[in-house]
Image 1 (cartoon, rainbow, N blue to C red):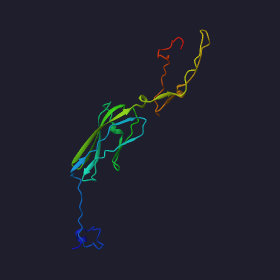
Image 2: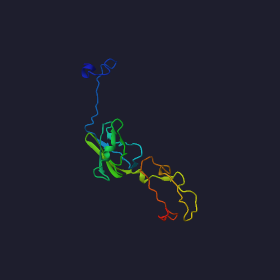
Image 3: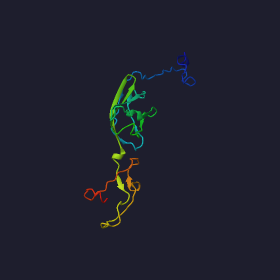
Length: 199
């Protein structure tokens, strides 16, 4: 009896080991010893930031067994909002890509996310939070130039002092995001309002 009789696909059949018996050992992933989860850190993200990635990084014993991942939104600012709809899973890299850029779909607030993995008979889950931030609430604004002219004295009866300016060229924001038209309030240095009959 030769190796080709015992194992027809013997890769050594045409070599000097052709008459050796080949035993193929297969590792079954149907029943595995353990599934080790990996902590996923909490995340804070704003609509104007780029797509970010989440790597669950679960491990199996034995190694190299495939893991099926699921994502669930346990809680959030809106009961009907499932933040997992913004998750795209890449099975080749085992990575979730997350794109949160629409405040109408994903309102700002704290979302509790649970990612679970299953391999064979074992499963495990990790829970973490994603805090979605409206960039308009954290934007830093500054004046591109002085709004008012230097101090001037006017008498009653003088011609009105007129100065025109546009909000489009006055404000500079550190966020690239459309927050809508700004609102300006003119006050005295002590933050008290001006006389509305004069201004």
